Image 1 (tube, rainbow, N blue to C red):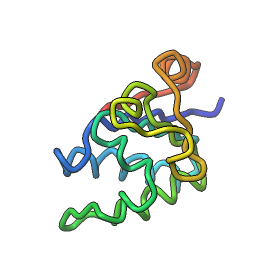
Image 2: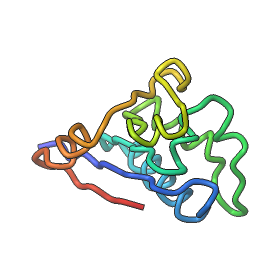
Image 3: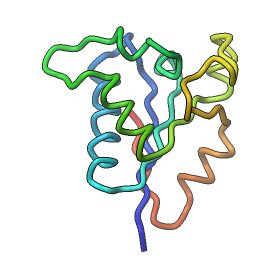
Image 4: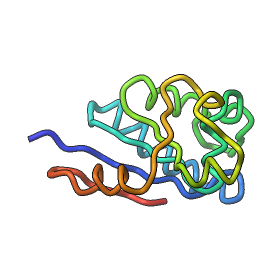
Length: 120
């Protein structure tokens, strides 16, 4: 049975270490061949927009844009519906491959047999 890793990032530039950790874990798992679903919530929702990940800086951390690229290439990236709406982000605003979905979809993914959810 294949395992799925569901990672929810709840922080952005407001808590850079926590944010980078979520992206690093998700990208590392994706690069290792694990099925990954990264959820962008709260301030991390901004990284669903073009150019935003490139603006993120954290010493001794892999560039967020590169981590996001790995995840988008091999896995799934979702921006929270309510979080996106609070920031006036719509489906036409996000990077190619990013979807906007709500709590029901997150719960469905997290409860799938063989799934492991991590929240940062």
